Image (cartoon, rainbow, N blue to C red; front, side, top):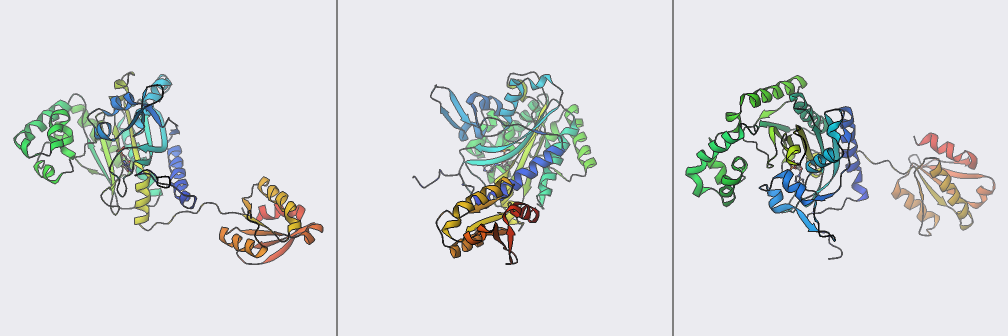
Length: 420
Ligand code: AMP
């Protein structure tokens, strides 16, 4: 127990943190270029926010939330996604009263009690964006372009961007009714979940993963058949904007996202080679959500991309990772009499902006050099009491193996100049 992490969680070790820095930094860069600013939200919120915001018929709310009462008796939930919290922050901080659209991004852990498998975890990490206050189809296209731009900068290939429109509260009832009419004769053959969806959330009949349900659903009406003129025009404009931006996509009329608050544009990005969990990102419009959460009617749109799946996808495509900045200098001590001086040298190097380390196990000089080899710094400083008395130390270039003597008062400059 004490040495097992909870199922579905992962440790991210120092040896692999470079992957995460790279994914996060690249995301920050892309978002900055597209005019999005970072928002940091609480990891937990009031349970009610997710129940309202995600819809109580969604799998996440019904089965997957980490919900508990805190010591004050309030029902708290570890966030299963980022959108609801962003909406709450938009309202609570009166961001709707300022210039629109408000364009924000976030990164961080999310929590869902799902059955763990490759690419599916109980604590996982998403990067996401949310844009509030504009219904402009150009914004829909922009966020899809941003997501695809991000993946491309990460070197990923073989991606498929699937786009659909799920309509609005005006045309959604038509689709609901037509779906119910279509599936009614097959009720007894649907899986138990779909039978329940039939009444509560018929749109979800379209994205059931059960083979039998998929078979039965062939020829079912799609959202695109039922769009009202406004929604049809909006969807056409989104596609036009995607074309202007040169973003490749496929229209997938069966794409309905699991969450109730989505209106108009819905999209998902799929990649091959990472097993059953092939969705590496998805998003869409949620023009009804801000109002549901108690705010003024406000259009909104966003996406979330799963970082663990991006890592799996990059590795399945044989892409390598940039290394984290290596150690610049290791400070070795040749004899005990030099060790106090070496402590000062180390502090001076660090104060000079260098990444420097030393031995803490009382190793012999030989063992220290071996340790330096493992840490792989650019240089090793060897401090011996005799040379220190003359104001000098030995500096070994670890790549070439060459060693030279450097006056102590020039050491920081010398190493700074060579480790940029
Ligand atoms: P969603 O919020 O369900 O639309 O998910 C957006 C993205 O987050 C998905 O496309 C996945 O890449 C990722 N994701 C969702 N759930 C999980 C999970 N349980 N484990 C790992 N990644 C996930």
